[in-house]
Length: 234
Image 1 (cartoon, rainbow, N blue to C red):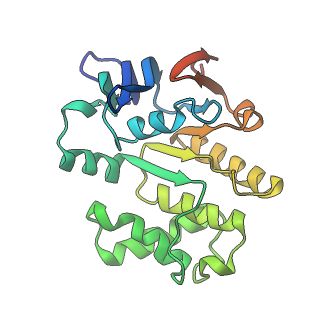
Image 2: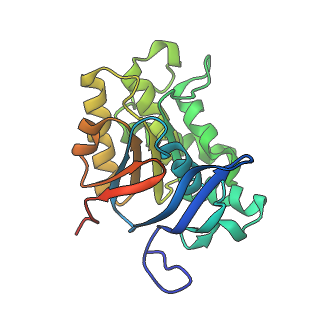
């Protein structure tokens, strides 16, 4: 379990974080306090424009706070160089998006293997680990299928395999069921529960209150502020 600079055991810690843009400033986040422990499964839920995407970018080290401090896996995001932030993302954080972001015309196994390109894993090992990741998400029989040969649920499972192939401790899922029918969405949610049970910390960003209700912890955000938190899982 990761310890930050004061010895606390959090994989995510936001201390009074604010993020503003433009002049005069528009405040996307204001004075956010949030900690997520290693191994939790958390939904960050709120309507469009609530600040969810900004929070995703900060937790994913795609952005830095304007005020306050963001610690991800013990690292102070505001103090890291761009190169170190890129390395943190490559080795410690996996991303799953609503739109899948798979390379068309490329097989499932190569789409997943490409998730290891920036981690330094040798090419011969990338394919082996990609096969293992696809098997883990129930797609060992679809290795050579291209995205247009897969259902929406299967494409999202390929995207999840790509996100976890490097075994990152933190997985960020942005509206992971947003483009799926209810049955496919339920399959993806069940898979996320399985990944969490195996030790991966998962943060789901969503406006879907029904999806959020299925997760052990729910953090509600509105107008850039945390308005409720069901509490960390025991």
